[in-house]
Image (cartoon, rainbow, N blue to C red; front, top):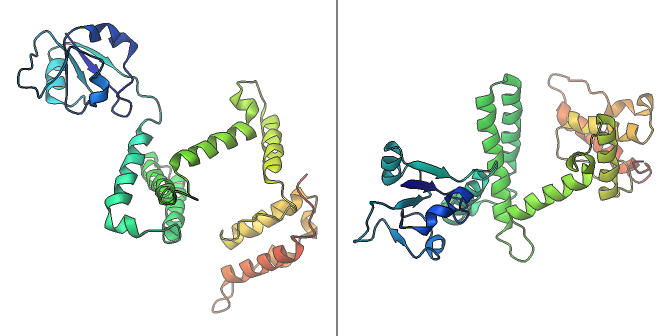
Length: 281
């Protein structure tokens, strides 16, 4: 007969090619949800004492199940659900839910307590990019994904004010559809047009009262200084008009921490000029 292999993340989605085989006797394995076989009157569990395997179609969501492996080895026809890109993310969300619900360490974490791990994992991703090792990069991106899943799961604990991973994904989709409508519509669009659409739509979203509004203060001091300089240039300020004290720093052995000093200078500048700088055009 045949082996029908369902997607374990979407077991109720049966491949079209398998529909004709669902009319006869069916044997389903343990992990197939009972709701999937309710409408199949000739379906019997492999655990049933009077189950008849001969002449039946095997319905499973586990390719490694002994019965599935045996039938596949015999050369029976295999019909398998297509696995869409991203489907394993559902399993990742489920794993994170178990960790948060049962893990003694995971239960204690907050958004604030995870800050250092998010920073560490981000720098490790950057290191992996520099090495050019794709296997290493994949591993480090999985660690970064953990941080996204973890923060979303923590937020979901607050039923009144929180959010969950679906809200995060929805925010991403909504943002991309608004900022890159030309690309996502399938239109033939050049690079300059895409950039202009992105910047214009982002400015519309943010509605910043000043070009310096919304500066990410927690980033490294050099990156902070560069972002301030780029924002000022976007407002029409030339490079030679940007104060030297926020563009230059001297490292002195035994002197004041250069990172802290540059950050102090840049943030002082932002606090002074934030209310007088014009918005991004």
